[in-house]
Picture 1 (cartoon, rainbow, N blue to C red):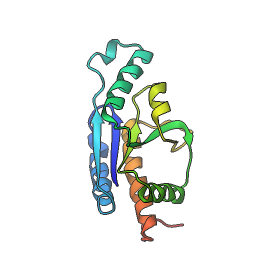
Picture 2 (cartoon, rainbow, N blue to C red):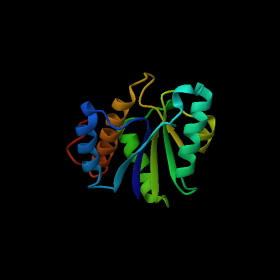
Picture 3 (cartoon, one colour):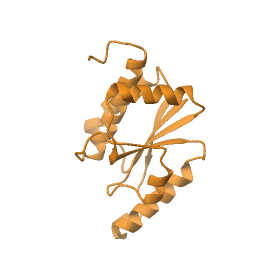
Length: 157
């Protein structure tokens, strides 16, 4: 099973880049993992919120295959504990899923077409976080889930 972490927006900011790289490297000890940063459309500044979300959705949906398992990060999603996230990863690893895509949407969220395509919608919190911090938290939480699955000391109850 391969993990792909996708985010719509610009490249990682310097203040989170090292942390994201570190946790992604740690995840790779358990599952192959990498990042895909999807640049916003070139004309994003002149698009309405609705049109921007539609354009971003087209870019995302074009890159997904029908067999990809899509985990959408959205504030309206299900909140889970770290052990529950570990259980989800284990279920996916035991299943026939070759690629799990974790998607952080654009500045205005995602179009309904992406929401409908998602196999699972996950919320870190009812709070809204800057995208750069979500990237860091996502990579850390996936690493934490992997360490829980191996009963390693990183996660303390």
